[in-house]
Length: 613
Image (cartoon, rainbow, N blue to C red; front, side, top):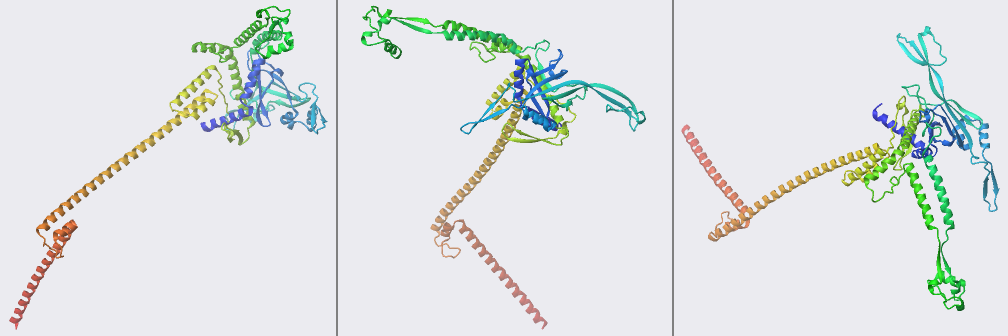
């Protein structure tokens, strides 16, 4: 098996396990239980052939844990109560229940009374004796016990000593080559489920993980942690906030009473100043008081002899000063409650504009000293749960050649993965989970560097989005490295393209230059030809003026005029004619010489004939 195959298979298995659990939502819910009850518990097991992870209500969970241990899976036993709907019970345990037991499960469901209403609709009245009337009580218990393992030492057919594990009922037989049997008692986890009065799955936990290097490594199926396990009563963040919540409730009750008794400002009006003689009564005067900026009074009214300053007085019945004091107390309690658990205004982002960056970071680092232990404990729990989930998935899918898993990816596309479980048989896998403040700071720095890389055109905007979406530092770093690598490859391609384009442009420039050179050469030849023609024409015209009757070719046209008309062609034609004439004269001379020789030969022959006769 290659390293790539191993990594890919491990990754697919982890993705499958994580997708089944519901991912971050389950861990966030467990973290919430840790702060509320000092315990976070998750169940990891096999249901219907697939790995399952459940959030466990810590109020219904009980375990036996040594004071020196922080994690629940290392305990000796645990019990938990589930409230399941009948359909959930049948979905998980239906194959192990008889038809009668299934009927009993559904018979315990709350009765529903259906009443017919006039308009033809139905109303459902559910009679609940308590909050769990429609659920079935399911109990689960796990405990650790010892199991004998026999190691047999024997001699094989080559007379060599070998060792193997045999069944508990195996008896030593020295006649077959057995030498000795050694017994080791190792811990093993057993479980039992109780549905109403029926017990199912009584026996060893299916596929419980055993470390091959340590047979005594045994864990329960419930994974989690308990805060301050050394104390008889574990404490959590909520325990620190209780006292402040009590004080806050008292202050808010007092504030509510003050708000209810607050009457605001009232006007003390001299009723004798109301102008009754002008037909204005108290009701009409009240109307003008509320709807108009003018208030009428009559200083001459009987019984009223006062000026405008003494007509009415303002009575302040408001309790706003006392209300403000209680609000300040409530704010103080809120601030103290936050500081007691490390939630300062700086952590909440409420930083003063006059506070320096260094002081703000110092305050955040100081507050993290309170919260960091809880986050580290939760990170350990996440790591243990995911590791156990991978091992459980290996057991659940063991014996299957290929498992097809369907996923919806981040881009909303669907992917079907073929998981070969044979590659992971007998392997031990670990996970690393980092949720520390330092990791968050490193990730923030990576985001800043990614922004700088975007400004310098080293990465693309889509790569920055990919970095921001990553949950871990390693993934963000790998995403940024991949983006840089792709950018470098793109830059190299651009450089190669530019170099090729520059080379092509240079070749085109050289070709254009050579073409221009040829054109200049042709232009020079053309100019020289035209110049020569002009010179020839001028010479022929001058020659024709001095020799008007010259006609060497006997064509009836003056040779100089003909040369002026046809230029060089006339010279060539005349040269050819002269050459042909010379050839003709030469041929005539040759023919004359031949005739003379023939005549001489004839005379000699005649002379010889005469002599013979």
